[in-house]
Length: 244
Image 1 (cartoon, helix red, strand yellow):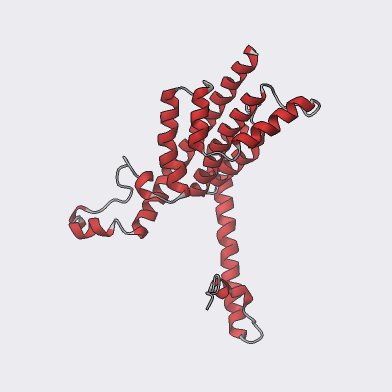
Image 2: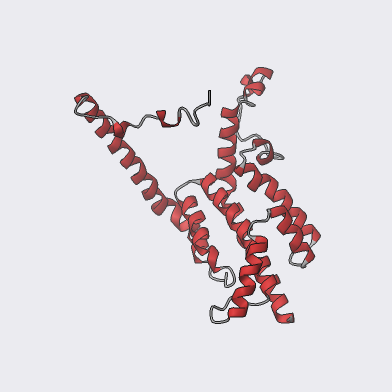
């Protein structure tokens, strides 16, 4: 007998699907929950604008990414996540920015010039380069950057370590990678420190809390670091254009 694919996929419950005509008392409860969620969202956005915007707005005014215009919307999304306190989302999106920036650097390096939609030859070069690099892993693209002298060996090693902590750590949710070398994110009262508590802190629930705390403390620095890498990449590619 063939097993049913995703047998329990449609078994999730959503309060909005409840027929309030059959359960009149649930209508009032649903309205209370709905209003509560609206207030929660309103508070998040209000706090973002009144408390966090002034601190993070500088990243919205980055204007020198002349070779990576494609990344501007992604950068905005990472900043917006910081403003509303979605730190894990900001890190995850910033990882996308870094990986895409390295691919774009290689594509433009291979093409040998800035994109020009009036030049069929340059368009063809961009399409061919995109076919080569868009599907390759970050590790392979970093190696190619060394070959083209876009990155030196020290820079590439730093990026590989950064990739292990931030990109792989958050994409695959590997707390061991994320928290390596970090001090404890959750403090334990001295009178509670014992072997049993230490064991409990290895449970997924506590690891998730530590990762969340790490993201809160490091999401902005991660974005700042990646924006600096983007600047480096575009100027290294420009050096190649000047030599051509």
